[in-house]
Image 1 (cartoon, rainbow, N blue to C red):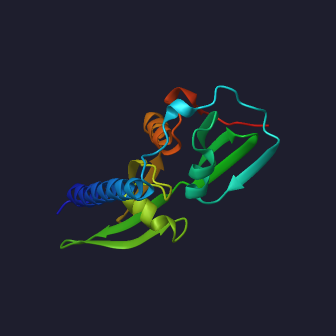
Image 2 (cartoon, helix red, strand yellow):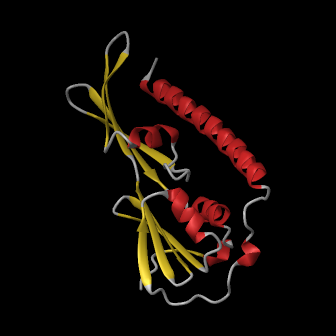
Image 3 (cartoon, rainbow, N blue to C red):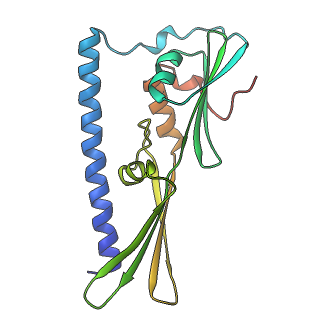
Length: 191
């Protein structure tokens, strides 16, 4: 099996896992909506007036950020220093959330009979699942890009980098926070 065929198999496995996770996420969302007795809040409730934030809060859990920032008057996101950052202003508070983007490097050695994975490097153990799923822990789908480098000793290094599609990010944030897409900016909110 050639290197390209092996990479195709890895891509196929990752895509199947993504689809299963998407299906599970949809089912969980439907169950949560049923248990709460109502669907997610609608964007029509977005306040037209945004007050200048008096305080800034950095949250480390997406669920808490989503809850506190539902129907926020202003929302922004960006990638900075390999981190996905989201900020939103609601009720005079500037809320922020950030999650590190995964990077993965796979070292392979090909023999006449097989390809051996010599190692996989990821920034942290927590990022392994994000890297394999192609989705951040918060749930946002990432775009993968790969480059291949053949070293003189026969080792092949396959570097996988992850990025965010701006349109996918806006759509996802809009549904997560019940904010109109037009009120989501790519950039940063500062006091």
